[in-house]
Length: 600
Image (cartoon, rainbow, N blue to C red; front, side, top):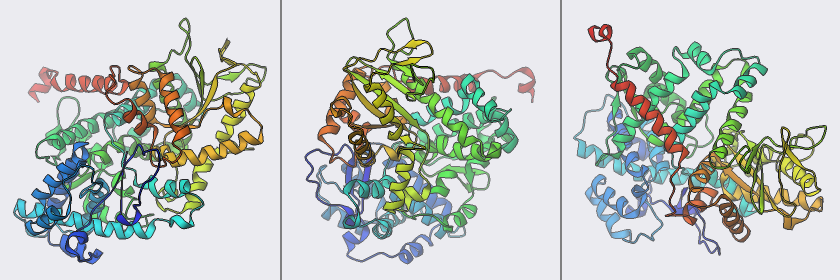
């Protein structure tokens, strides 16, 4: 996870425990020239360039900094030399130290996303075509100008640390909207499991019957958009990898796709066109959405996230950022399905889809049934006539029992992007820390932990689970919303948990620190379990949390990557699932056409 902040928000980090996040500041044009940049300056500068050309250059910039090496200082300086005007490049070269320990960066994704929205609103397709090199340098200059405006917006919206109740609440409110999370194959994997394979799952079908939904996700999507959800996803997967391959070229190139070019045996031109219409939008239609009400121009890019393909020319689409396109496979399809499934019932169904995915992931690396020793159980209950639920999942290790609650809910856009401490923290507590009547999250965990510590047994169906009487119980929340994985959120929610633990006079030495795992964390746990035991990972992480409460900007994923870097992994569920899909897609594309098709 990366966090690049305006200079006004950075301060010395004297914590004993180094954050597992990459922290840094971003540079602005005014730092080098000494002249402040206004919104009007940026609009005038962009107004001299043709919109379609600017969008494609922004796509190339985004692709350049999308990879891990693209954010390294040395690479950024090389990039600056190529895309900045000579006079500005000379100022940059003279002022930035050639030292990888320097925390500042010239280009980052939030800056590029901000520049994209400004270009869509400010540029015109009627402008004269420019020489490609001249255009590239003008867009590079616009990026540094955008950083100036971005810093001004973020400084205005960021809450004052002195007014915050504590550092955890300030970091949770200020930083979760700035998190720069890498998006890759894991999103394709989730899309396969959530939207395609889950349709055949008995538990999902049972839930749909319970909700009074006689159709399937495919049929509801077909009624709304003229093609099935499966076909929609497969078409977008092909498009996504075309854009990703373009991003990996040297230099990167923002591809332009049109339905007739993508047409092959598996899909018709009409099907591809319909898919692009659902996921795409013309700049003239996107511009009013960007001008509409949003929580923050600096962080709330909802209109672009909901339509990641931009129709730069009639019937021809490009992708200005592959990570935004990747995120669409979950968040964007969620929104589209929420509109397609009647009577607002999709939100209720989504909880079942989320639980199914998490359970499936745990069962990939933890034995979930006899005759082998069970290490994971989904939906455990207490032994007794009432059959009370004991959690959504439990991991049974030698000295550790991991008790889990799954939370598929999400913060509202206002709670995530408006940077109002009171509203953000209220949203977090509603999802993860409600006690008493209507308890949620740690409110459920603490009650179930108390019953286990009092000697009550757990079971799955008729099988009684073996929970050692001396094992330490680690409370875990598994969340859908990635921003909730921030350690500042964990620290705040754990503080609520500890108050309740002490009110109930529970033995604290038997309860481990609270862990919050995102879907990516569970995927990483599965991946690294081939090289490190699951018990060791949990013990190491709990030890880190006990010592490193000052680490407010880190996450479990950051910890596991830094702690076990170099450990061999050989059974990635994500890579295997995506590999199977791409193999099937390739076979379809290379399959010989029948005589009737060839003749046509």
